Image 1: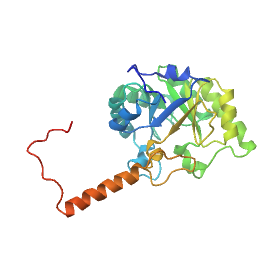
Image 2 (image 1 turned 45 degrees about the horizontal axis):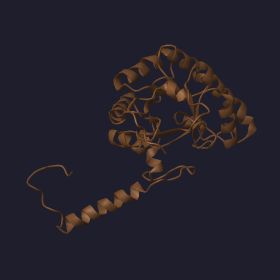
Image 3 (image 1 turned 90 degrees about the vertical axis):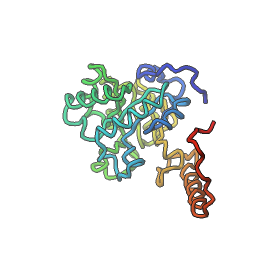
Image 4 (image 1 turned 60 degrees about the vertical axis):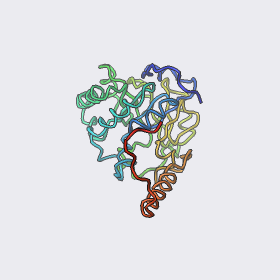
Length: 272
C-alpha cells in the first residue's frame, strides 16, 4: 500500500479514469482526525449516511438530516487533503425531483467544498443523475442493496441471488452509467453479478459485500476497525479498536478509583 506523496486533491475525473486500472481504495469517514489518518492511503473518502447508525445510534440511515451530513462533510474536508471527498445525500433530500436534488446537492457542495455527492437508486434516478451532472455536480451512484430503501427491500440481504433478479440490476447499472455517474457503488450483490456488471459498464464499480473483481472496494471504517457492535458477515476486521478503547477506559477508571491518577501539572503544555 503506497502513501500519497503530494497533497493535490483527487477529483471525480481521476476516479473515473481508474476504470480497469489499479484498484480504488476507499473508506467511510465522519470526522477530521480519522479522515487525516486515512487520507494517506485511500483514493476517496465517503461521508456516508451510515454515520447515523455508527455514530448517532439510529437503527437505520433514514433519520439522518441534510444538515448533519454537511456538518460531518466539513469535518472530513478539514482532515483530508488528498483524497476525493464524497458526501451522501440523505433520504428525502433528492428523490422528489431533479430540481430538489440539485438544490440540496449544490448546498452540500458549497457548504462543504467536497468533490462529489452520492445518491442511491438505479433506473429511477437516471433523470436526476443526468440533471445534476449536466449542471456541474459529480455524482457517484449506488445500486444493489440501497439502505435508504430498506423498508421496501424487507431487510439487509444480498441482492441478485437468483438469475431472475439480474436483468433489473444490470439495467440499473447501465442507466446510471449512461446518465453520467462517474462511478457506482455495488452493495451486497451476488459475486457473479457484480463481476459481470464491472466488465460491462464503462465506469468504475466500488464493491461493498460484492465482488473482488470490482474496480475498487469500500468499507465502513468503524466496521473494519472492530469498533461496531454488529458487522456484516463479509467484513474483515483489520483492528480491535473497540476492545482497545474499553481496555483504556477500564484502566483509567481503575486509576481514578484508586486515587493513583496523576495530579495535573502546573501547565497545559502538550506532550512532544
